[in-house]
Length: 147
Image (cartoon, rainbow, N blue to C red; front, top):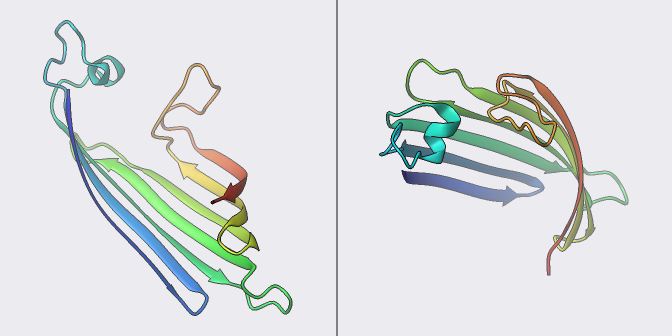
């Protein structure tokens, strides 16, 4: 199996506003699809032809001008999606909103967000995750530490 992936990303900050985004194009060529040894891609999807996928996200934030919390509390929002560029496949979309609290500048950050995913693009029999094409709500709390 051969995978070629190309991407473009950007990030910017200006006076309390921030924006990040990324676009990815991936070309999956299973090569030996349907023949032993079976390619993992073919075993999972039963697709023997080359598949082109793409996805992108855009996330924006704003440091809230609340007295005593300047440069500490940030509201964020994100939209993203993935899709296959073949066989009339549908895509999967995510919409998220949350808050970031900067405890020690950019070194220690507490993040909380809620995400709505339409048509999950993955499945897992072992971890009780949603199946492909199910919708899902995800609530996440994360402590990010950099050093």
